[in-house]
Image (cartoon, rainbow, N blue to C red; front, side):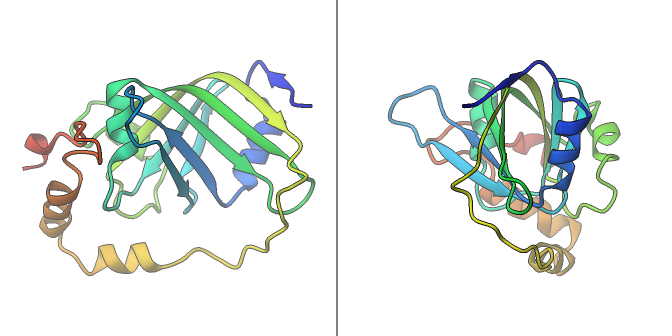
Length: 185
């Protein structure tokens, strides 16, 4: 049976820091909109307070999480133990997007000194923390991070990265606003 926690204590923080992958889920307000579930890695998640998480969104061809958060703010982050004792933690909350032109962006981005191509940051004010057993989650061995994103980004100029975001991150699958393209130009 799952248990609720009032805050991210040291034990939960250590669990979060140990995981190599986490999952982010969001959904638009409309019933016919596309629910989004994204895997994340690359040491891109930080516990920044007893009820706050921040992750570096390195970007890609979609912009669903950003669009959903701008529309309604709902988000859940899930981490599963793929090694060691079986455990799952879910962090339910309200998320907000920090883009490079926002005042707090540089301060928060400094938490990720080795992160390539941060497109934006997601700040989550956690409203509920719940665990579950994780008995059905298989054991996996971590072999290392993929170098695909770093190689892709290193092959592009800063302007080519901006152009890619302009071309791919203006709207979600459901036509919701994504990145503030006018501020990228």
